[in-house]
Image 1 (cartoon, rainbow, N blue to C red):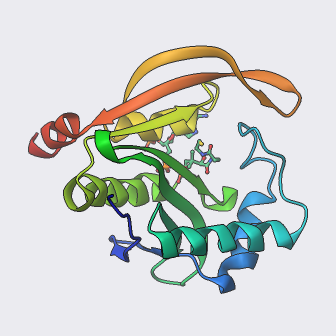
Image 2: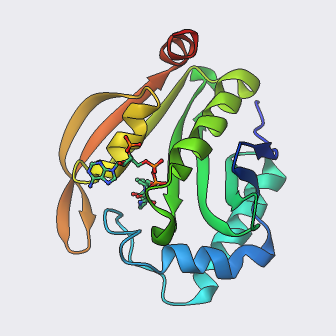
Length: 187
Ligand SMILES: CC(C)(COP(=O)(O)OP(=O)(O)OC[C@H]1O[C@@H](n2cnc3c(N)ncnc32)[C@H](O)[C@@H]1OP(=O)(O)O)[C@@H](O)C(=O)NCCC(=O)NCCS
């Protein structure tokens, strides 16, 4: 069976590293914000214990090497501004899913694109992935833009797949193949 461990990755402005118990407050700031979970089938967190539970799950995943989960830290200030993860690995198919979120006060500075690029580079080159998938709400234009900038292609549309804050919401389904990634890097 393949295992998936979470390394430390660095980019020009960011450090991506495994989550730690001390990140609970920063994580709570991100996910208690209704703007961040606007398109998610989960309510904003209202108690710090949700952050502690999420971190406990991440620590379990690190121990079992089942997922890659990163805190996104600003290199200059050491502030944790979000998370990015690769999860739901299908070993036999070298495939997994991508998730990400950035604290709303840091939107629009290219941090998501910079963080995800580093994680994908690691995923394709070190982990040996062949395909990464993302399921987003088609109304989430910033998220779609991030994916398209990184070379993801929109592959499908599934109506009313989720129930999001009391209403049915659609899926725009995106995929990125290693071949697209290599092509983009070579261009
Ligand atoms: C999606 C998200 C991660 C983007 O983070 P970010 O750090 O602001 O992203 P970046 O700055 O790297 O890129 C955002 C891009 O979207 C564009 N954008 C932002 N708002 C937009 C909108 N309403 N319509 C179209 N494009 C938009 C930006 O201009 C930028 O593109 P550009 O580089 O061509 O100018 C952030 O908005 C977020 O955390 N949202 C909540 C959680 C979420 O939706 N996660 C993903 C789905 S599961």
